[in-house]
Length: 250
Image (tube, helix red, strand yellow):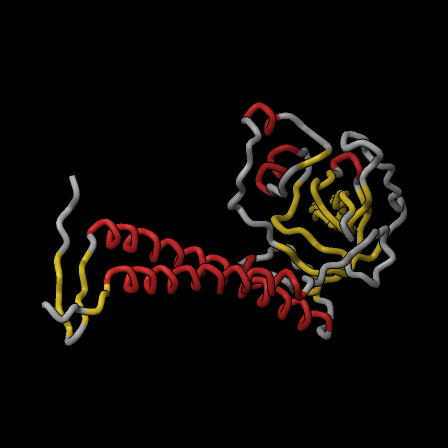
């Protein structure tokens, strides 16, 4: 059954309200705006990370205290510490791309000198093997090393298709950096942060392009404007299809 249209006359034009069109408009416009804001916020978040990264490059490296306190205050801070790498609990973060090549990020726990604490150090990117299941050989310094790098606090909002059984098993290759899961999986005390090894450090590092490419931020902004454009287009189409010029007979 076709729903009746309600008409309104404005000077020489008639607005015929289509309830179906109005329903579609009510659904689509908020959805498009929400998607646009999502992409816009992603771009702004990346810009903030980049700004924090750039600012930290000129700052003096801080010593890592025994108690970190508020983790948010340590985000993107430059820190310096000494210790020994412990490869027994080393993991590889999968699906990392560098110049269109697939590979891994190498995360190795470091026993902090003079303490019982460990901290995960992201030593950078290495290329994957000939097959995806082939684990590349990783060289690790055995001597005392000095680490200089930026603090990264991994997000706790993780989407994964892994089952609980898969999560409970120890694997060298991880799909996501789930720090809480890692802390519960190892027999060492690990701080709730990861240090991204500085690009100038020689402490067993690999490829470390921590800066966010400008095109990634621009891509998110482009998507945001696209979704906002869809919202505006929806309103204009709704008005165009519902407003007609009145005939002389009316």
